[in-house]
Amino acid sequence: MAIIRFVAPGFDKTIRFDVAAGERRTLLAVAKDSGVPILFNCESGDCSACVVHVETRAPGTLPIAPLTEKERFLLTAIGLLTEPEIQAAERQGISADVRLACQYALGDEEIVVLFNNDLGGA
Ligand code: FES
Image 1: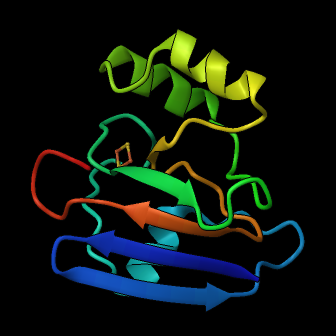
Image 2: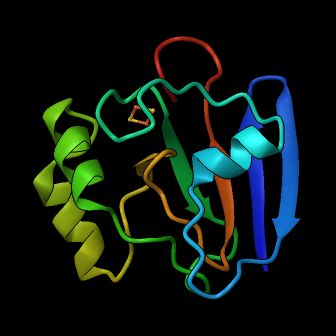
């Protein structure tokens, strides 16, 4: 079961749902379906409107999804992550916490998603 707590200034909502085998549902899709006001625009990993911070609720037990190639490219291009930061996280067996909600494919995870629902991202 996925357990996602969405947190923003004045907003705190926890969503629980089962992830079917082989299902690829993004964090943004779940947020939209659940009335969570994460900003978005392109929904294809090209604009950075949907930047969020993702943290595990139980560090060391439920890893967050690995960065996609689109996330890696865009987040380093706009300076929110650096290659050394990404590589340092990967050496520890974890993923960077700055993510694109439209590209983050959810699994059975227990995570906290921090976002700003005003212009300027998380
Ligand atoms: S909505 Fe554009 S990168 Fe996610």
